Image (tube, rainbow, N blue to C red; front, side, top):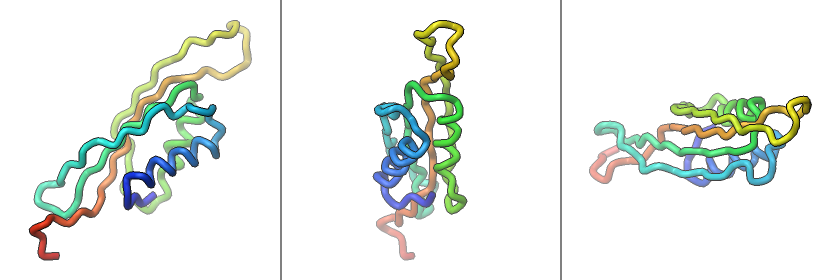
Length: 117
């Protein structure tokens, strides 16, 4: 997925959540971080932290793989899982759910004001 604007990533995540059957409100936050200039280049390193709750491991992997359409250098740079204890009986066949925090990073073309390109 080639990202041209910050909102594109949020829209894509919400679409993937729907496509893969995440519970309503499973994505609890999408927080873009301040861009970091890559040395003296015309590119910014952009990172966005995503928090999901009550998702299965399969749903998490599907969403992360759905972000990669082979056209960008988007990558998951941080990943944290926290198990959410099941409220149902231990004999339940319902899948385990997790709280997942991950950071997606990508480069965005952003010419410097002093650039002659």
